[in-house]
Length: 175
Image (tube, rainbow, N blue to C red; front, side, top):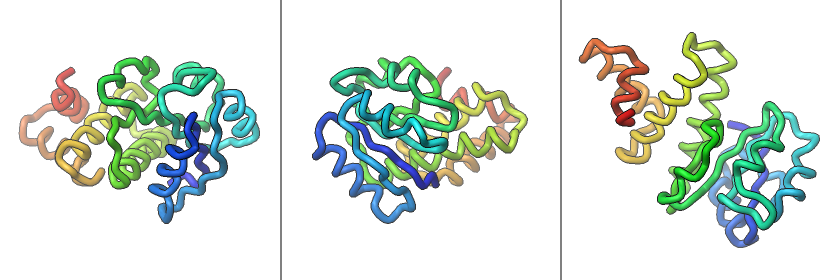
C-alpha cells in the first residue's frame, strides 16, 4: 500500500473519520487539508502520494484538483452514489457513500493495484486496465469479494464462456 496519504475535506471531522479508518493499514496520513490551494501546496514536493477527498472543496471540485496534480500523485474521491457520474476523469477513482473501513481499504488496494500493474506492463492498454479494475471493484463492493476473488471470478467466467478477460469485465459492468 502507498505509505503517504493526504486527506482533503472541508470539514475536519470528516477527515478525522477517514484517518481513523486508515489507522493500522500502513497508510500514513501526512496531512489534512481543507482547501485546494492548501492541498496543492502540501503535495507539491511529494512524488508518490494518494489524495483522498470529498467531491468538493471550498475552492475547487475534484476534476480541477486532479488537473493540478503531478505524475505519481493519485486521487480518490468519496462521493454520494448518485453523484459518481459527475466525476469526468477516468483516472480518478470514485468510492460511493456510505463507505465502510473495509470498502475504503479494498478500494485503495485495487486502485493502487492498477498503478502497479501498469508499471509491470500487463500487456493491456491503460483503458482496459481501468475497465478490469472497475469490474473488480464492482464485484468486491457488491458481493463482498477480495480483489483476488474478484480477479479469479472474472478469469473463470472468461474461460467458461471462451471470451477475452476484458470482454468479460465489460459484460460485468454492462458496457
